[in-house]
Image (cartoon, rainbow, N blue to C red; front, side):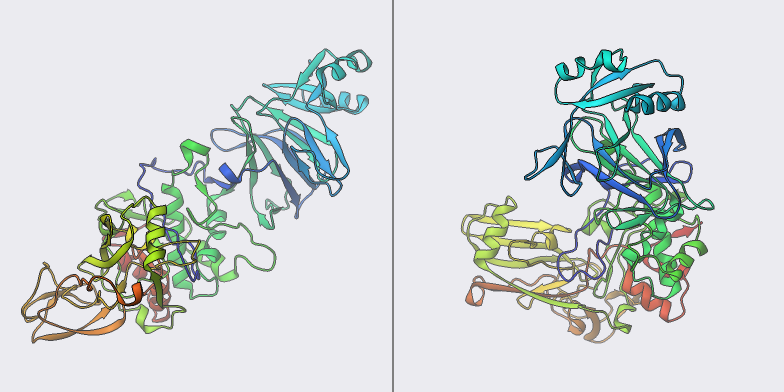
Length: 557
């Protein structure tokens, strides 16, 4: 999956090899992980920007919202239950902040035996407490004490049944930036707190972390620690929240429509995070970038929304089955690639072909060049587990028939290593040196991905190009005559002649101990080129034409 359309450096690769269910979407709703894992939040704020208030409850197996109670407050915070510190600015923390703070302890006086939320809420108002849903029962909790003894001392004063401590799976709801608790939810991890905003004419819009989102929210705190924040949203609204962040929302309609079908196909087949986190798809570049309704100043455009509406419900299918990996990338530099040569494993609908369209438009940062010193590469390889000592030589040891890089060999003072597939580019990435190789289509110190018969069927060395089989820009096979031909290489259009080798190995010890990599394109080269889609759309091709060019033998329905 393409990660960031205009990224100038490293583009993280996504490709799901896990077996997913027939559809991750349930009842036309998708669960999107917004903040989770190492980025899970101790406290998460919501602000209703369209209606008034929120309902509390949970989402059942059909992703229908089951309401327990509600509030008219339009700004609320969900926080990990237990000892909570609130600083002078109203931010919640598990640690004592510097300066003044308010403390919400994890011990409470508890009153039981309430028939419903209204019954519990009425008693809570009378005694200064709050309603809670604990293990499937309504209770009232009063006070926020630091110790059990403090809570026990107040049991008689409030007519309580006992004392209780908030557990490691509990979530409390407060009025944002206050110590006023509205609700507490704890089902021991068997269910997650759900929050559904009150909307307007069936629409919802809620601010969270600088973006507005349709749908509701789920807060998972299954094993203690911080809270995973999940957006539960209609699949079409999800796709609308993807398109402008994976492709420019002002591009031609047909390109946006093609992107919409890809994004929808991806989420229906997603399952990468289900077993670990319980949601279908993440909202970041590891899956598809998703920011809901946008940030107010940026987000979905009327054209990108039109593209989603025009293709509503449509997905890619291959031999009657939903396509599991409708991957795409920013640009391919001249040719897409077989998934087997990049990610491993044969995938019939992801086959490489020469791309004649990208060269017909101006693509920002289409060509790139990056130079590594031997010392830099030695350090980068060591950090990635390749202990070959000081790097002495680097060269492309195998190309694909499409002219993309298939293998790169590193020779060092203590041995050598050859990497294959997508690792050929990702192995060069270093945040320390702020360097990367952006595509699968590149040269090292002048070795040419476009020379040496790389478009020629078979392989090995040719004495003549005459009669050699080639793949044309339209994806059809043909034969050459004569002893030279023009091909699309990593450096653009290149003239090649017979007698070249399929891989170029520079002499050991490059000049000045450095290695310069030049290439074209941005991404993993598999599936749809987004700039290629734009070029096709500008020439009048439909989104069906675009998808059928970049994906082999697919149907759209």
